[in-house]
Length: 110
Length: 119
Image 1 (cartoon, helix red, strand yellow):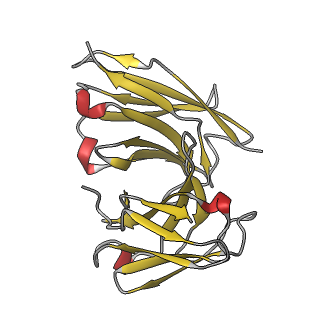
Image 2: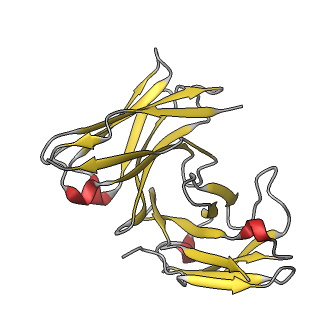
């Protein structure tokens, strides 16, 4: 059982927006500046989409955005495209120096 | 650009030691600004951070609570690489193992190594 809770699946039609929540506790997401999001296509390594709760690495489209409220972080994918179909994972610093991940959300583009 | 190349055995017998190496190109294992981690992924446990090593006047390691008694991460500055050793493995340690760069967010990942624990 993963430390952070994500819905197992989410879906949307091309052009729509989808938001994926990631719920933790006051010991991780709620108190951490180090919440990240990853995209993983089958057979590939995860790719960093968001770090520091809301920051995008260079090269990540601005269709990907994130936020946090209390113990829940959220990733929003706007203007859904076929290539956005993938698994999405959140992570957070926990207990000072450990990193915990969410169980992952499979995003389907209808 | 920074690349990480993993190597090591893909089959390990129960109770033995899993050993993997991650060779770094385009960055330095001894960099004061870089942190080097190991992460694994399995259907049963999902993504799981295992530990990290980093240098800032001295070497430091931090390990996940779940594997703390069995794990060692060693940097090798002469070869610009770092390694993972996990002792007393069981079937629960069967997973895809990744090396990565980062403290809490991992921006560079190795290609992944599928390690199976089986006799």
